[in-house]
Image 1 (cartoon, rainbow over the protein chains, first blue to last red):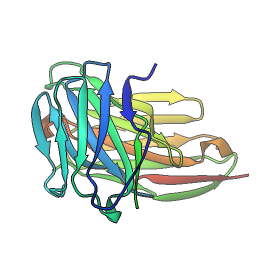
Image 2 (cartoon, one colour):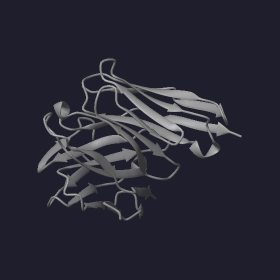
Image 3 (cartoon, each protein chain N blue to C red):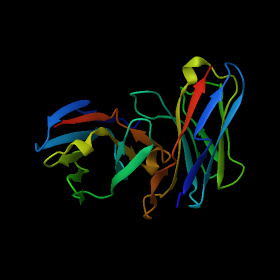
Image 4 (cartoon, rainbow over the protein chains, first blue to last red):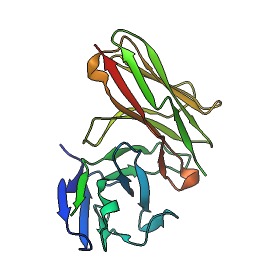
Length: 117
Length: 112
C-alpha cells in the first residue's frame, strides 16, 4: 500500500498560471520534504517541514511556497510557473530523531511530473 | 553545511563485471541511504545504513558504511542489464535540521 501519495502524477499548467501539487502520508511522520528534480540531475531540496516549522532553502525562489495544514498533508504552490519550473516534484517523509532515538528512514512518493506550456 | 559527493557520475560496465560506487559526505551524519531511480520514475529505496561498519546486501548489490572516513560504498557484483539505472546516495542528520541531502547520482549502464 502506498504510504506517501502525490497527486496528480502528471500536471500540465500554463505559463504564469498558479498550480498546486499535493502530498499526503499515512505514516504519521513529522518531517515532510519537497524536492525538485530536473532531467539528469539529483533531487534538489526546496523546503521541508519539521513538525509545523517551515524550513526554506536559501536558494529556493519566492515563486515556490508550501503549506502543511496538518501532519498528513503538505502542498507545494507555484505562484507563477515558468518554463524553467518544468520538472519532477518529489515529496518525502521521515521521522526525525534527535541523536538518542532510532527514527525512521525517508520514504518518497511517486512524484508529480510538471509540464509548463 | 552537509555536502555529499558521489563518484563516478557515469559508469558503463559489461555484464558479469564487478564495480563500486563511492559516496563521501562532509559532516557527521546519522543515516545514509542508497536509492535507485529508473527514467521517469521516483526513487526506490535500496538500503539505509545507520552505524559504523554497517553492511547490507540485496541480490547483487552490497552497501557499506564507514562513519569515521565519512564514506559509503555500493558494490555491484556480476552486473546484469536490469541493474541499469541511476543510483543516488543521500545523507541526513538531526544536526542539520533533518535535511536529506543527495549526491549527484551515478548513471549505471550495463552492456550485454
